[in-house]
Every structure is written in structure tokens, then in C-alpha cells.
Image 1: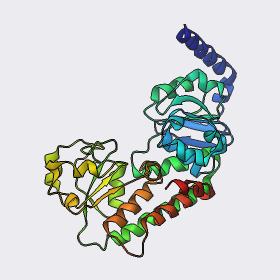
Image 2 (image 1 turned 60 degrees about the horizontal axis):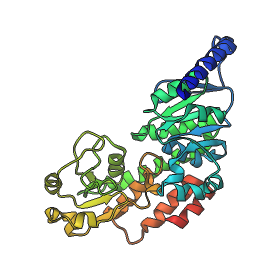
Image 3 (image 1 turned 30 degrees about the vertical axis):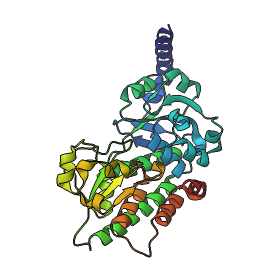
Length: 337
């Protein structure tokens, strides 16, 4: 019965929207804001949005970096349930600390009726949520979908969200800072004659799930001036222990796991990174999300682990990045580093 009511609601709203807005759709008047999303849909607005429902974590993170979090009226429930998200976002926003923001969906799905009740000017989704995006557009809701799987997509998302929220100057400043830091690292990396070979493993004990050449983590490795031992042209391939032994990396980068995951495996003995105890951990995960501008934190850390300098403190470098990206709000995050 609920599904029938929802379908009737959508159909009626769509009809009403079409009747009352037909003249607007035929208008050739140029809107003040125009953005193309990851699925090729145009979002046109007369003014920056004031009420946002965001159901995708990298986009939500970007809004806090843009100082546009006051526009957020709805988030995904994972923010409250995940220990990898809640402690950090609760430092950035008292509404999250007190669990006052509405949760009309998860990080990958949403309830149309719950979203509509929040009366949003804009809903932000991952591009994979195309069906939900289409259903929301059918009832007259503005939807922006994003994809942040590649270097340029991260920057594009930041610029798009800035245009939609009227925070363009903030975005220009952040993107310019990140690009300048990458350029500095590249200059240093270009002087290294023999680059270290690195292997990356994902979290939750998946030590044989790695980053292929078509991934943001591969970009982080290259930006850090190390060579990714995985040559597969995919995002996240799974490999065998024998393959890892044959690659013989100089260093291993882990995502939120203990190095003991490698040390306890007898079949991996002899790998240079394990023998020399060159295993490093990106922890806590929040500071190193490669699908946001915080990919810089990841690259900076890997670079300094690979080519240590006594005058450089890695944690201090990460702190500098976080404070730049989040501004004053970043100081509270430093309690969790």
C-alpha cells in the first residue's frame, strides 16, 4: 500500500509541477547558476541553494570544506552509525554531535517521501544512484550527481558545489593550494633517480585487495613519488599471495589495519617491505579519504614515509593540510589525529 501511495504521490506531483512550471521551462531566460552533473544533467538556479540533502560522503565532506554546512538539512544515516565518520563530523557540526540532522537515506540510497518532507533546494547523490536521481527529478527536485574516482573529478565536484552554494572564492583558494602542494611534491619526485616500489592494501583485513592503475589511490602513490607495484589497469583488483611476493614492494601502505596482518603471514616472508618493517598505516581513515581533497594528506604522508627527512614531521604536515582544508573547524579535528 505504501508503494501505491508513493507512486500516486509522485504522479500527482509531477502533473502539478508540469502544469505550473510549463511556462518557466519554455523560457529562454538564462539562469544565474548553471552546472552539469556527472550524469550529464544540467542544474540551473536563480540563486545559491539554501537547503541541501546530501547522501554521498565525499560531497558532504566538500560542503564542510566550503564552509557551506549551514545549508545541510539532511544527511545519510551512516554518519551517525559509523565510527569512521561520526567522531569527526561531530567535531565539525554540533547538529551531528546531537544527532539533530534528519537522515532520509543511507550512503547509497534514500527515501523519496522523507527527502521531500525536508523541502530541499538540492539533493546531492553519487552518480551510481541514477534511479533515485531520476525519481526525485520526476517530482520537481533539483538533483546533483557526482563521481570522484579520478583526480580531475575531485576538483570538478568542488567547483560545482561551490557554484551551487555561492562559495566559489573558497573553492578557488582550496584547489589552488592543493594543486600547488602536488606541484611541489612532483618537483621533488622528479629528482629521485630510484623510486621506491609501494603496495597498497584496503581495510578490514583485505590485504590482497589493492589499488590498480585506474584509481585515485594510484594517483596518490604517483603524486607521492613512488611506483605502484600493481600494474593492472583497474580500480581495486584482488591478487594472490604469490603475486605480491613476485612484486616484492619496498614499502606497504595500509588503510586502517594493523601491520600484523602482513607480519603473521608466513608465505609473505622475504618481501622487502616486511623484512625491513616498512609498513605504514593511513589512520584515522577520515584524514586520508582519496576521493576528496584530502588525497593530498595521503600523498604527503606516503612521500615522507618513502623519502624521510629529519626536518619533516609527517603528522605535522597532515595537520597543516587539514587546517587549510577545514579552516577554524579543523582545529577540533586535530584532537582525533
